[in-house]
Length: 104
Image (cartoon, rainbow, N blue to C red; front, side, top):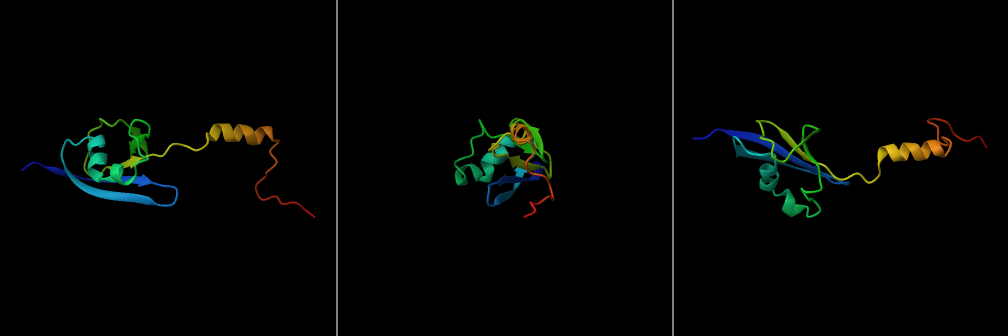
């Protein structure tokens, strides 16, 4: 009997997240766990050629061998670049300040 590992595969949508716990054979790759989870069929917007993946919030390659109790995460693409948004706010003269309201 070969050893098994337990992993969790997570995909977070804008409104909710989906999580699948799997018991897989030792030596399973990150990509294989995602395929086994059924999330690719449930969420057709996931494209492993474009979406980044990771283990416990650390970017990982799809060829990474998983360990027992790993949490595999499928990341959505960013809607806006955070650096670019900060630059735009700075260029607008920092109009918005935290905790300061207009006095009428």
